Length: 83
Image (cartoon, rainbow, N blue to C red; front, side, top):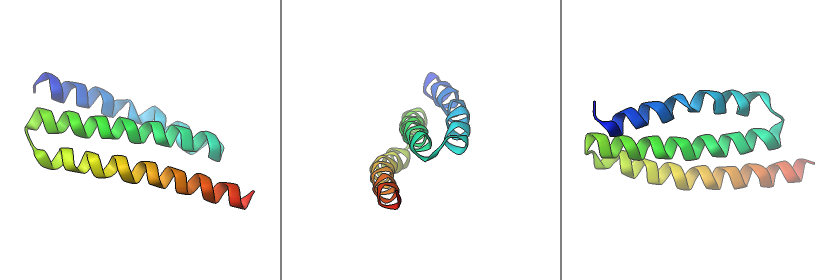
């Protein structure tokens, strides 16, 4: 394992508290934790791409970044309509 993969493992472990916070908080706080977890997951994928020299992880990170942002905005828009 190289340094890139070690960094990916450490950031991957940081996803656990964010997932717990997203599950236990009210919707507005949960979305914040979910967005932070999405950014963390994108960084993990980019580190995996660099550590394994695989372009597919970088492509997946790009798609995850775009869909995570759009999904968060859509969820907040839906949440405002319900209230």
